[in-house]
Length: 410
Ligand SMILES: Nc1ncnc2c1ncn2[C@@H]1O[C@H](COP(=O)(O)OP(=O)(O)OP(=O)(O)O)[C@@H](O)[C@H]1O
Ligand SMILES: [Mg+2]
Image (tube, rainbow, N blue to C red; front, side):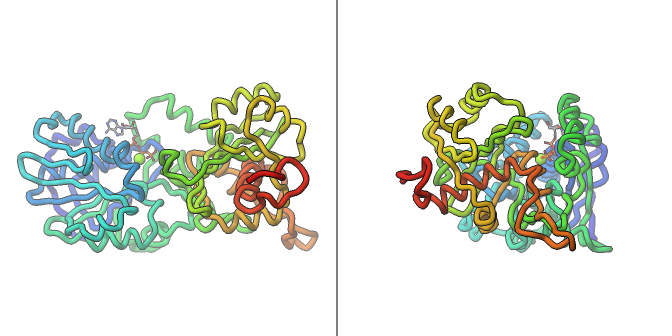
């Protein structure tokens, strides 16, 4: 691995100590893996700006899966770093292009989403890259970037991500080998002295309530690949960091599972091309009366015209909610067909610890010989059920049901 010093010493003070060792060396692959709030993105931005300042004729690009998400994440982090360093007057930013140019040495930093195939194709060679939330990328995406990083200068691809699943290709490629072709820094919120204490407390609370979520976002450890799961991570569902404006999606619907001792779960489904479904948990709480539920749902639902599909075992609660003005229907309850349908969808889970927790535990029951039977365990399936009612009824079952409130739905 070749390395090269380039950063002046004065920057060290502003860098989270855990990243100090990789600040002024470049390696072909720098993997910044870790829990939430550990300072990965902030550090990546600092390093990109330092290289922009210190290395002559050095062109860099920042990548994310979706271009639309970059303005408020990577681009904002880069510009904030420039401002923090008191350098804003030496830089020019272009908000349309999401590019930044150093007015002193002419070095540029451009932004590209992997969803913009034309831009990626037409991109000239670059010397350095930062790939943010890299678990959203396919290995092919990553290889495309890798091929472009060959302009003169110390070549480096900085990759920042949370370890969302032990089945992810990033683990196989960069972590499961004895001598991985990468420099790796693994951090957690405990490494970041700049993190607000209330955020730390919030994360720590997940240790009790959402162990699977805490494992990934608190401890910075790979999400476990459970055997015998119905929904396999990275195959049937994955975590996403991208939630685009509603108009990006073809439609938005909701699934609702009623609970009392168990939580009531309201899940938002943002659907594109009938197959790509982004799930967001909007409500997950036990002990809600109909009034409570209606009040909370009114706040949570983006547009009262969006359809809600609810647990048809409770027609009276559905009726009450309909009278309160919700566009609510009975969801189809065929468990196996519904699960089959969900298994054929590409599910993306956005900022939803309860959904992650359920999907990570949802299993077939077993018989006396320990063989799986056609019946899932029913103890932790509220958000999964809500999702199933909505997706299956809306995308497959509409109009088929002759009984109940669905007839006449178009
Ligand atoms: N060197 C620093 N100086 C000041 N604040 C910092 C520094 N590093 C990180 N922070 C702050 O800590 C918080 C978390 O940092 P950051 O967003 O980089 O974490 P992350 O590891 O990328 O988290 P996630 O996994 O959630 O994306 C941010 O509010 C950031 O501004
Ligand atoms: Mg980050």
